Amino acid sequence: SIMDLSVIVPTRNRPDKLKMALDAIGQQTHPSLEIVVVDDGSDSGNARENERLAAALDRQATYRHVPGHNPRGSGPAYARNVGINAANGDLIAFCDDDDYWCDTRHVEKAVQAFSADVQLDLLFANQAAHSDGRMTRNVWLPRLEETLGLSRDSPQSPIPVSAKDCLIDHFGHMNTCVFR
View 1: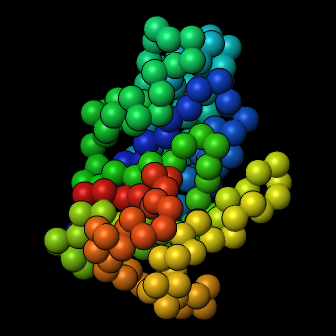
View 2 (view 1 turned 60 degrees about the horizontal axis):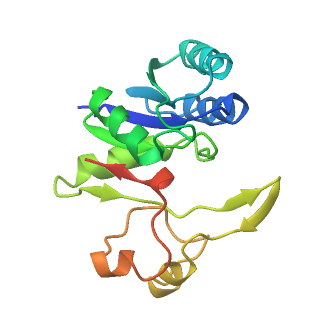
């Protein structure tokens, strides 16, 4: 059976960035995808635009506005937890508003991995980092990639790693993580 996946998208006062993230999520090939946009206390104009962007998606989408008690918001971890509580999927993925998935099969591949291994609890991928249109890091986890003997040309199938291996380098970025 096709697993449902919920992607949690924390955002705050950045509808231009949110649009880019949502456009990329909307391109995902997996059919059973729920999007939960959690607005962490955006001002009213940005909140209205964020809600409009969520409503305009061709996918099942939910918009949650967290009232702004703190002038800087409650933070992405709080927003992610609000999203998890609102989510209906068997699997949870995260994509912050200032990130986007460039592989249109990211969710499809994750669902296949979870379907194939009932003991799998967490899947994460490598990523590139860009700032102001320039690549600042072409590989997020170079030491892990090196330890596992991987390259950009390596097969794209999941590779089991230990908890220790997960901490060998930087960290598996939340925006590439999928959890059961």
